[in-house]
Length: 455
Image (cartoon, rainbow, N blue to C red; front, side):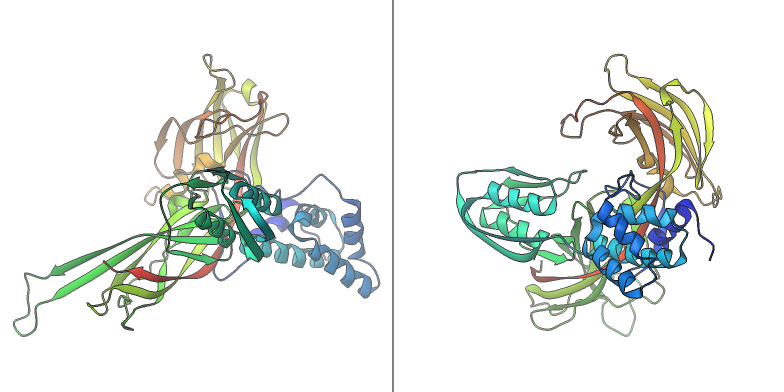
């Protein structure tokens, strides 16, 4: 068996075999994933187990596989490194199966919380969740009130909402980072659904009644229409950056009388588009179109829906520019795009802040009559600026942009502060500019809202 080299096999595993409920596809969007694809660090015990995957005794091979899978996602980078380096077909096959399983679990299984705390503060309870999940949680509220909290293998979102509701707080996951925030606020989010590592928050429902006033049939009743729209947010756990969602679909919806609120399906509607512009984040939006059932009804007893969520499975460097501060006007060609690197200059009035002038052109399917703004609007997210220690500079989009869909010229600022003004530790001068190719899966999720009031 001939060994596949380099990123070819790794990318195939990430983008070609982790299919959960829908389709998978590589996407040009988003900065690097928190989970590295491969690792330079070697755990001796893990290395020994990987070696045993090729043992002559099948019992030793099976035992090594079970022990590796039992260690969970923390061994994924080392498994991927081993997959790139091994020449053994047997080891390749076993590693491929394990990577597929562990990556699927990583992306689609919620982190869970177990605790039994008596007479403790909200901050102490949230700190316990942080220790168990490695998620950063900011708490802004009274730290004097004390409560009892008990969770047994409870999904992350369920646990954090329970703590917030008990303490009269509200959970916010709507910033552009991976921090969960719990605020002491006179507000309530009562209509929430959970599905794996995702939280669905119903935000608004509106109704529109209309009567047709022209083109009325001579024989027949006046045409009356009643449409409703339910809007909701989708929030992912911090480990799960989302790149977009498909059009949400209603599976079933009934009011308290048992009447259906499902809109009649249009046989000509084959929409399955992605919204959110493939913009990487932990918060996105969806909506359902509904119709009135029984006009006397006051609430939606149950609404079941499904949506495909595009998740960032990993990234692979596509273009690497060394010593960008010394470089002027050079073209680099990657697998999916061509990059004209202009200049990288430091702000004379604001040391440690830089401006990058680049032009990116999409390769492959770039018909000028079919501009791909879904690609060009977010291509800046693929570009990273890093110092010698590997620390990343922050950027929140171009200062200027000239975009025709298949080519985009940008002037992108980089600095060391987040949107809230928090400064990262001191960064050294940038030594690399990296353009990443992102790999995604589309995971189909079903969820249910209950007892939502009707307008």
